Image 1 (tube, each protein chain N blue to C red):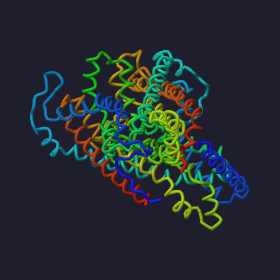
Image 2 (cartoon, rainbow over the protein chains, first blue to last red):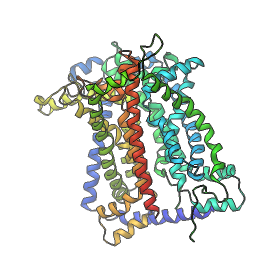
Image 3 (cartoon, rainbow over the protein chains, first blue to last red):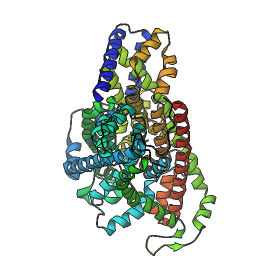
Image 4 (cartoon, rainbow over the protein chains, first blue to last red):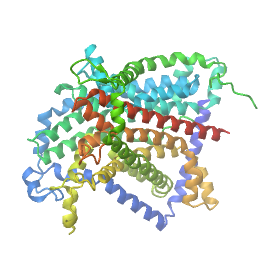
Length: 298
Length: 310
């Protein structure tokens, strides 16, 4: 049954490519105007990044004399080196990578379990259950800090990255459950029926049919969870007090209070901290384009 | 084939809904530990006087009465509305426009590579950790040697130089601009992924029938990505009500209370003035607002989905 849905998709994309091929030839002035407008908007979006780039490789003296908008007189990596050694950057990146990766994986798995029961199992009171799960998303994080601090201290996980993994698995899976259960609500019924006629158990349907077919949605969630966890600020700041366990954003924000750090060092630090996320995005951007609900072939 | 669907039936024929409960157990236990117990704890704290050292002392409704009369609290919620404008309304409208332009015009006329580059560019601020985004933006808008003031000076508009995030007349507006910049990529990417689902032949057919871009947008694009619009609107509204990081790092709620938001206000009570009970009351009130908004949202969503099914 999945081969037939694949054929449907293949036929569609062929038709789409043909349409694109034909349309490409006649670009109107309006089309060019739209492209130019979008490019101007894009430049505005990137402006802060350009400013970072201009200043990250300046010396502090150069910045003082020429201001933030001029090209650097000479390329200097002094700011970069200063930051790199001061905060032990590779260690921070490693902390961020494994924390975010584990949260992404656990969060997706947990969302799948929840959504299977809610979207496909249609258990009673599912709307209220989804709302209850969404509480993880709705609670302001500062409200969680005191109780979580006391609980994690009690089990000796305070100042442990595992606390962050556990907390954010729950928080991210709330959004995941909300999204995925509505996607599973439109999961092609024909496929489920065919599986049931073949005598597949619920667990087998979950593992061998629902999981592979919804993989495009799951990978989008994986990417989102990774980036969101990578960027989290308040709870990691409160929980990871030890320098050796801190994540990249915490290391960066500690700079703004540091009087020894000048503007160019901060710019260099911000720039280098973006590199891992940008690499991650470039690897996975194809995933994003494949779509969040493509699993559901209607 | 007309068949009445019983409420107890799952989407797998022959599997009653009740047999799916075990799949919810791991999620429920985790939720209980990380969210529900702390939430109840927080509600309890809101009825106590607690300064973090001596054990909490029950004071009944004292914190809540103080809250109702607290002008700063109400100002913080008024600012929340501005945050919703900046983080939900404007990004969704712009995101709809941009995603359909990129999908319907750029992708067709200039190729998929151009389209995905565009998407990446607009998504870029979403990749930045809030701490970095705030650091960079704070530096662009700062009064001495900030990039915006330097730019104004360079083009001969030096008179317009301003302490953009530090002056009461512009702080909120510039915080909003920063939030739009941060948020825009999120609806854009989600809407574009929703559009992949639309059959391109539909657009082709509509174009052949003489439908212009705007008509195609209203008739094909908008209905197709309705589910995505709901998801984005709800998650962004929640994020806007809870917004903390940028305020904490850029303005600290100031100058005065001009950019204070509930989350930041409760944070100051929790960790700066050590009035944990009062902080808990603010946080609980905020949670309640978020819950009510979410319930209203999902009710509307369900109603719309049901209408679509019919």
